[in-house]
Amino acid sequence: MFDVSKIRAQFPILSREINRHPLVYLDNASTTQKPQSVIDAMNDFYTTHNANIHRGIYTLSEEATEMYEGSRHAVAEWIGARSEEIVFTKNATEAINLFVQSWGDTHVGPGDEVLVTELEHHANLVPWQELCRRKSAHLKVVPIREDGTISCKDVEVFLTPRVKVLAITGMSNVLGTITPLKEIIASAHRNGTVVIVDGAQLLAHTAVSVVSLDCDALVFSFHKLFGPTGVGVLYAKKEILAAMPPVVYGGDMIEVVEQYRAHYREAPWRFEAGTPNISGVAGVIPAIEFIKKISRDGSHEYCSSLSAYARAALESIDGVKIFGPLDASLSGPIISFSFAGIHPHDIATIFDAEGIAVRSGAHCAHPLMRKLGVLATTRISLQCYNTREEIDRVCSALEKARVLLAK
Image 1 (cartoon, rainbow, N blue to C red):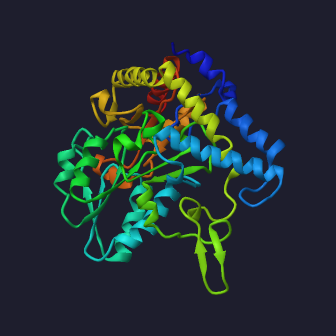
Image 2 (cartoon, rainbow, N blue to C red):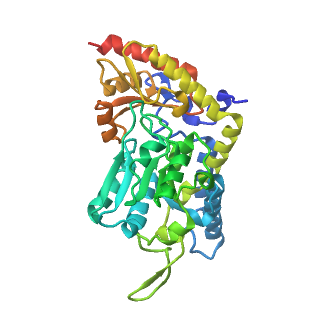
């Protein structure tokens, strides 16, 4: 049975007070807090194993290398991939850019089309804009429906023979919209289109098998998965990686360097030039173990129930407008809303005075904000350590904002 009090006890930061109030942390779509097991693993690396990887013929280096490659294997096993299909990056943004600059520059040419959706984070939009500019290709955008969803049929309208790649989020960081990935990917493949999935939000709330999805590539960041900052992942099918040249050059990604020519290592190592975030990768296995444990205990069901409670509580407040799917089964625990007469930044400021951390702004999704007809929203994003009592505090803070600022 899911016990939120036991979960919260594993996160030291949740005992903090902010402005003389107990911390309520509701910006999990931006980054999650870290359990003690992750913090301990990173500290243990620096205190007992610190050395560079893949280079030293001595105990510390061999220990560090074993940990690093063991973490790669753990990531692969977690999402159903092979170890050689996992490339470590510094975040999901870098992973997307790596794919665009390597696979995209190699396989997209003049007149080709790149397909994205109106749900995309800037990280899964701007790199494709720039690729199309460089290659004289055309960017096509699948519009969302009025309720913030996208169906397979909506995507199929845009699947012409010229569409080389579809870049699509698994879960919107603004609306929480869950896209029907499996159906969309199958349709794209029938069209001969490669599909890369932005899984930054999806993996925090849903078990993902790349074999079941059959996506060609998937990106995510561990800092949104209870892990450290500075560790991202690009998964790509082995045959996709084999067709991708390196884009960053230097140490550790080479086999042999001659005076005027270099020979590169196989994937994934040819994409990991230089010294990586080794201490961060040390936190990967405990983060995965934590996710597996809470998933078995019912964290996804708990977050869904908490999200439904939050939506109902917010909808009961006069002046609140929630954006995105009305059907809770079509969205994750990410809720963006406006409050009549009060700017989201002012709401966030009042919340902070009450010890409540939320995100306000455009959420790195300017085109989506324009589609919604707003400049910004207030966003609460929930995780396994949040509670109904914290949602109640949000509602109380909104009423305080009304008294102080509503016109």
